[in-house]
Image 1: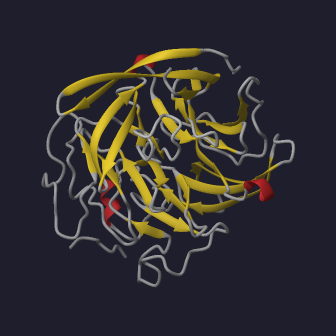
Image 2: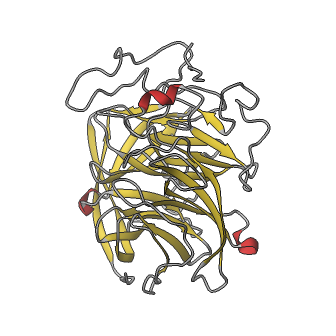
Length: 381
């Protein structure tokens, strides 16, 4: 039954990077310095701090490593489940539990092939928990908490960003698998959805579609295309961004039970041109984005800066990586809207995959390259 919803080794060096800002057509320049923490990473996808010095970094090829400034990245951590690597799929996001210091728990998501336990054919996004061993060399007590349904044979649009909510539940973003985009408007699949689960994999009783006939109870919000950026805002609420098709990349604040429109409404168009569906940008009962990029920047990674390490002007700003145009966007907000964008790190000429604020109040970014880097941004001098 388908229910439609309509109505490497650290390098001790710093590099000045030119940045261009645009506001009402006026260009300004500023600079930041970058410090290379690790390099020669194989298409790194996510970084997560486990203490003040050490980080976990995922490589899309299926490796998880410990990285620390001044020390060569560790050998791959053992104990990961079987991961289907190909296209946009592989080992993707990772976060540390808010109580990692005492429980050593991490959560990671990846592309999972169909197996006897999941049934079906193809692949989909899965979310697992595990305990990092005391010597940080292997994962223990690995448990798959969630598998996106149905499995589908695709190498694209896995979504796969994880956020721990203030109530201790987990948000996981899920793509529409590209050719299954119409599923984003139904409740009997996880395609094109954001889901919310407890840390043991169970479903919170207050999820918006619990008890609704034919609806998958994990669903939190619907009508998404491919969400590769997610974080909690300064207000403790979920913020996300997602890839549009050709144009129409969006920033949203997903709320329980709300419909974010894809593919019924979009500011983008088909690859090569031509409208998607009826070519609408608004419909009753569907949410408008807080901000959209046309042309697409191919956003990935998302973080609010809470510290004042770069001065008061940057405190509270939102940072988003661009894969297509190879920069880090600094977004100034007012009343929940983007009022100014500054483009940082353009001189790197590398795809920005992830951005996080570290315990030291500084920003860390990953570059999605065959010899990718983990960089720390230092205030300009």
